Length: 371
Ligand code: ACO
Image (cartoon, rainbow, N blue to C red; front, side, top):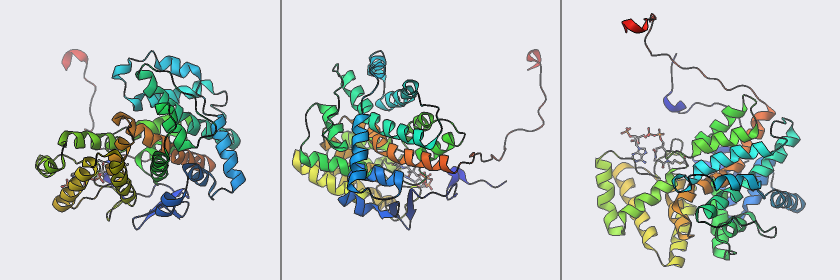
C-alpha cells in the first residue's frame, strides 16, 4: 500500500461549501475578498448553510433565530464555576461546554434534516455565549445575556466586555469572523466530517472539531503568535529573535500552509486591519514588529503568513485576552463545521481509510514469567 504523509494532496470528498483553487478561497463560489469587504457574518452563515446569499427576509429570519437561541442552559455556567478555573484553557472549556449542550437538547440524537438545522442554529448561537461567559466567570463576574438588537459581532464583544462596542471594533471583528468562517477540508472540518459520517450526532461532530482546532499547528497558532510577539517585545529585536529561532529549527507560528503556496488570501485583510487598529490604540509596535517578522521569515525561508499571523495583533488591539483568540476562531469556524456536517449527512458514507502496517510481524504470546 502506498501512503501519503498527512494525507497531503489527497481528495477525500466532494463539497460545495468552499473551495481553494489556485490559491483563491471562495465560499459557495464567492471570492473571500468580496465577502470580507462587504458581508456581515450572519450573511456568511446563511450562505454557507444554504448555498446562496440571503434575501432581506431570509437574513431577518436567521438573525431572529440566532438571537432567540443564544441563551445557554444555566447548568453549563454553574458547572463552569466548579472547574479548576485558573488551570482551564478556554478551548478546553468550550470543548466541554459544547459537548454538554447536547445533554440539554431533547433533539440531540434526532437525525432528520429539520432537527439538524435547528441544532446548527442553537450551536452557532450558543458558542459566543459560552466563550464570553467562561471569560467572565474566570474573572469572578457573571455572564452577560446577549442583546437581541445587536448583530453577531457586536453581541460577542458586548457579552465579553459588558459595554456596547464602537463601530470600528464591530467592523473589524465582523471581518475577522467572515475571514475565518470556512476553509475547505482543513483539519478540524475533516475531523467533524469523520465523526458525523459514523452517523454520530451534531454535538459530537462540533466537539471533535473544537478538539482538532485547539492544536498549535491549526487554530491554536494565533495565541502562539501573540506569545511570540510579546516575547520579542520590540520591532528592532524581531530580526535576531527570528533568525535564532530558525537556526534552532523552531517553527515560526502563523507562517506556512499545507495548501497555499503563493500566500493565504486572508492574511492581507488581517494585515490591513492590524495596521489600522494598532494606530487607533496607539500601539503600532505590534504591527511594526509583525511586519518585520514577516520580512525576515519570508526572506530567510520563503514562508508566507497564514490567517493566524496578523489576527493575533488584530485581536490584541481589540483588547481581547490572548487565550481567547482560538475560541474566537472556533466561534467563526463553527459556521463552516456546521455547513460541512449538514452536507455530510445529506449524502453520507462512512469515512474509513486504511493504514499501511509497518509494525512487527508473526509475534507469539509469551507468558508473564518468561518476558
Ligand atoms: N516555520 C518554520 N519552518 C516551517 C514552517 C514554519 N511556520 N512551516 C513549514 N516550515 C518548513 C518545515 O520545517 C519543512 O521544512 P523541511 O522540509 O526543511 O523539513 C517545510 O517547511 C514543510 O513544512 P511541513 O511542516 O511539512 O508543512 P505541512 O504542510 O505539514 O504543515 C503547517 C503546514 C502545519 C501549517 C506548517 O506550516 C506549520 O507548522 N506552521 C506553523 C503553525 C501555524 O501557523 N499553523 C496555522 C496554519 S493555518 C490554520 O490552520 C488556521
